[in-house]
Amino acid sequence: MYPTKIINDPIYGFIKINNPFILKLIDHPYFQRLKRIKQLGLAEFVYPGAHHTRFHHALGAMHLMDQALNNLQAKGYSISEEEREAAEIAILLHDIGHGPFSHVLEYTLLENVHHEAISQLLMATLNKHFEGKLDLAIQMFSDKYHRPFFHQLISSQLDVDRLDYLSRDSFYTGVREGFIGSERLLSMLDLVNEKLVLEEKGIYSIENFLMARRLMYWQVYLHKTAIAAESMLIQILRRAKYLINSGIQLECSTPLFTFLSKVYTWEEFSTRESLLVAFTDLDDHDVWAAIKSWKSAEDVILKNLCQQFLTRKLFTCKLGSQPIPRTKKQEIEQMIQKSLGISAEEVGYFVVDGSTSNAAYIQGDNTIKMVDKQGHVVELLEASDLPTIQALSKIVKKYYFCCPKSVYLQGELR
Image (cartoon, rainbow, N blue to C red; front, side, top):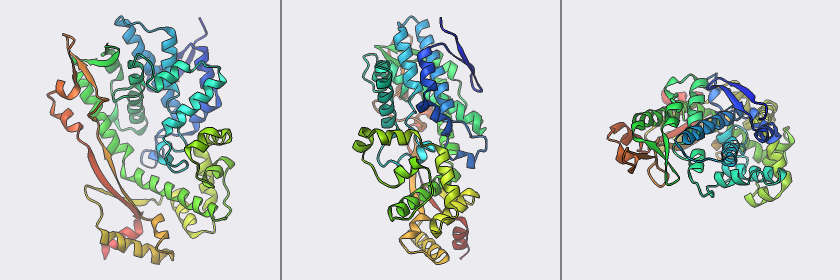
């Protein structure tokens, strides 16, 4: 037996780790970087308590993986120590590829590159460093292992990732509607043909889980103030990119400059070790330090955006079932252009529109399966006569429009 490491977690109490290799991974700089990347990006602009990090979430998800495997073993399923270690490593490292502000800047610093692809790249790099010890974990993460339930626990519509982030995000934001009883859900997991299913009696727990997910998306993840803050941050980096590529010097860290000064293809990023090193040096602090410096920039657009962002004078954000009328948008653009003395092309830094959608449950290949006492397996919607679950499977789309608040109000009064 190895000495047990005990971590005090506000959600689960004590998280116990007695695997020395997992402790090595936790201490690795790639993983420690997650302490400097907030789980909810800019949600703190709405919920001041939302300061938890990807590091917290990864440890919590690993703890739930351990619980899930314990419950399956208690039901008689064989899970080797090698499989347990690999599954816990896979979920521990599932978010290791997140960049600054998590999803907010996912396509800003690196275009058309999803964080999961970077996670796989970093896992492969760690695997090389640790001489193949992550082989099985990578198979599970990539859904190439012959027992698919391991991948389902890592990534599915009922995985330990979602179970942790819903409870954790609910706790730190204070949005209690998002809290779920993960222990009950995990206790009702079962296997049929090596695939994950949920016992029939868990139907009401699933309803609560899906409802919590829907509420957290509209109250936290897609809150209109969070959308406004995210839009401003993206425009700040867009402008910085433009200025740097126009030959204008801007003060920022070397890793941030690396990705602002050039657009790299995935082939370049995945094959040039220096780029991966630069990425693993990036965190939220690089961006905050740059914004603090750029608030004194000579460029009026960058200066204005940074000053407003730092003092929380955010864009106003209108969220609705229909896009804003084109005439209203043009009127606002003209007012911005006149008040700031900028060109029609530059107005795009102050007017952001688009759409966002959410479905708590998505029908398709990756659905939640239920098993009754006779062993019959059915898809969740077939098993449930609850109208709530039927409604939660419908995709809700909303349109947003963001611009400076003073300009929008001026347009409203006219």
